Image (cartoon, rainbow, N blue to C red; front, side, top):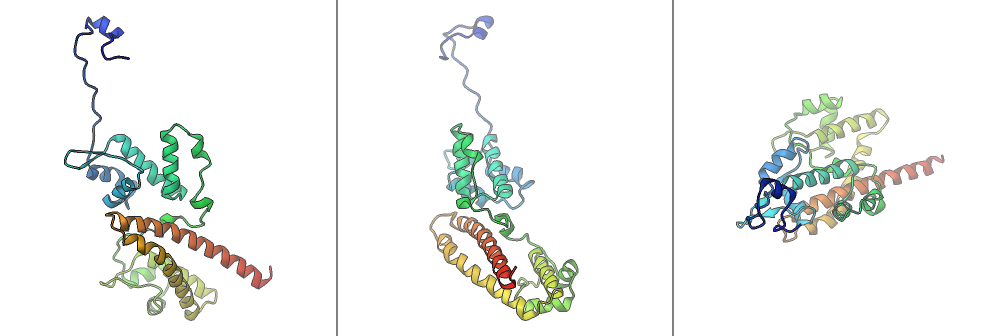
Length: 257
């Protein structure tokens, strides 16, 4: 409806078409810092770099001030939350999430319903599992206690380079998981040499992933490292899932069942 056309409200209030129309109320915006505070309660791993990366990938388009600062609306925050939930719960790569968002923007809801994972692959392990572990200050005794192994066994795992303390001598929760799994395998008959062989296989697989992700990390973009991290997580998920299926098939073949 034209801004110059009188509405029913105009008639009731006695206003005329010659009166200057009121400007539309501008949406309230917030800084990237405020957005981060809003999201961190549910997504503690989200960083400013992550948000900037999602913008560089075209998934969000915050407003910019004359000085170049990002300003986010409530809709931008909800869009970010949708992206993060979809990554965490549905294990979808950004390419697929972008297609979903475009379908939503165009009103093509049906385009979202059949979306699958990366290239249609469904990883056995979520890419979220491959994010950097939270910073912790676990001692060797802490790890041994949480993993249910002795400090002596933990020392063997360190010597075999299956786990590695940081420069200050502390471990992470990922180290607890490795120690716990190693302890379970030892109880089933694995010795240290066999455990070391698993570590060597993991290193070789990591080398393959690094060969692809490292050139991305060296890009000139200010979000190159974030892009490489996202790519590495997706590849880790797929490589580990493929390895698990290959191990299962090879074991069934060797045991003849």
